[in-house]
Length: 204
Image 1 (cartoon, rainbow, N blue to C red):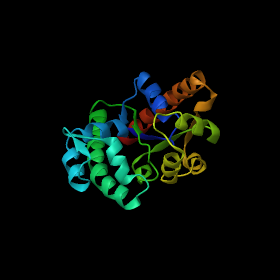
Image 2: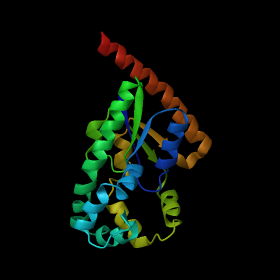
Image 3: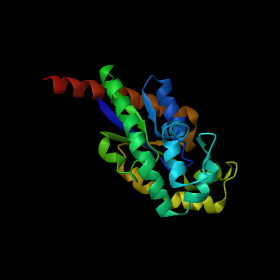
Image 4: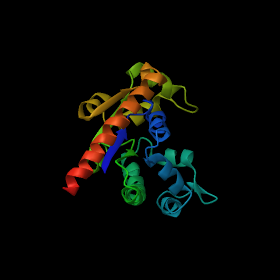
């Protein structure tokens, strides 16, 4: 089975692209969704211990947590040390299930693929991109977003140009939904064929 890492900086359209793969029947493991589930589950007491006052009624208050970690590298590192191993556990369970189902390939939707070393765990990389001005307009239109927060988030992410350079495939979401969906369908065909070929080679 081929493991494909899907990544892209904030505002590039990665989540929308991940849904397009899911709509084509491809198993997608969403790291953000996993974190969201962990924030109301096993990660909540660990985060409350590290950052008192950030958990309300058993659920991490993301806004309150953000006050502790955004722009604070040491605090962010403490948070990641709690969350990343739990996300990795869920990812392994997902991969085991997909292999048992003989899937030719799967998508790991990982926003910080390069930043966390996740690129070492995948066979192919798809980077979702858009021009910088489009990215800025998308992000700044989000509720509660400020210029300072946007810049802090960008500072934590590998530059888009570097992500594109290291990608096997690139999807530009600024060209419209139909264009992005066509590209996804092309990749599903290519990656399915590659996955079946890999399985035959390993069987031989």
